[in-house]
Length: 290
Length: 318
Image (cartoon, rainbow over all chains, first blue to last red; front, side, top):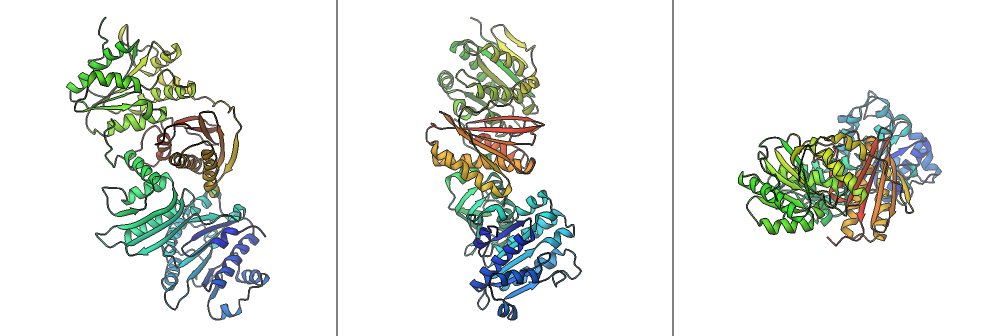
């Protein structure tokens, strides 16, 4: 088996992109993700396609994981191609997002377990769905997952999409990995939604590989804050932010004199980077050069 | 001796003149009337000189409203930072007003590598600020700088002020200078560590440089600066080149050096030399890289691009 350590590291609030070259690698990732979910008592919802329900069940059986009772009581649901989320077989983003949103809304509340979501994206790619449309979908999933009660694993088959498609879509995930990523990798960025005050606690790193997911989560949190009160971003555990992330914060209004978003725990390096991008954009008056 | 003729500057468009001085007396003779004329016209004036000259001129001129000073030895240690972070920044801070700037970017003691970047900088000024209302006077220490440097200055400045007076530069050819200094970078003379990268290994690029940066003695803030710079260059490779590239790292006695190689082509020499408009995206990253590093060298052709970053190992703590 290939090393799929990062799959074992996916936790609630993570939105992971898993790319694979062989079907067995895809099945391996799903099998590990589902196994961990069953062990933790999560509800598991798998939108499948090229990786069929039978193949996933066979993989779980080979791992010695019993699935009978979980399938019977609905803790594990394997939805095949042609299932209810796409009755005509074509890509239907609003329907897919609505289905995930409905599940997400219940997840983690009293009486409901947290949710693990698997999306085998082969069908979307096969339907010729434009990259921008897929990015929009993944960004919407970002917003749903960042609530911290859902873990999502999206599977992309490298054989049916171009490198450019992979790059564009991967950046909308907080973490991206493939079979060659190795065991030591953990998801690059984690975001935990806070409610009082409304905001996000960001843990990890932001760069081009997950920058679109970062931006999507920022827009979402800025929109959720009550009017007149800034959303609060706790960046004290954000170990790295790249130039684009700094621009995203600037555009969002996280830099004075704007007060739409308030940063808490800003490290000196990020503060300095924000000052630089603010100067470069002519948005902030700099001091006398003397 | 006669007063050097550094007055009578135009009132619209870019004026970019080289000023060849023989000694400190000449320097002052040129600076004082240039600064005084700007102040008399109500133009904001920026004097950006290397440390010693800055002290000299500042002592002689004193302070005045609208007169600003910058130590070019610090702000311009990376020649690629001068255009966006010294010149453009000053012009942008005075929207709708004509500005006047002294900018000494070349001095004896610049390394050969730095000098090449200086010559490119001087050549790029003409295009970069063509639409801006600014009078820019660039002092050159003719007593100490090499003949070839002064010849380059004639090629990058449309007008030269010197002992023979003020005259159009017959050898003005800034694009020739850009070509002349867009050369393959010399092979490193120290052991090199290499790492190939792609989108899903961007974080490893940072881990990789961090180890070398700490060993080289960079303080924590500078290590983050380098992480940001290298991440940016690698991300550019992933976006614009064939999805990835190679990172090389080595250490000299004075610098930690990181080089990114890919098969992309930065065809526009102004990329990274101007802060983009607020709605612009291109070049945002490289302009920040110029601000963070002590020297940025670039060689780009249709066959590929290499960008080399230097971080001084012994700079004072920030």
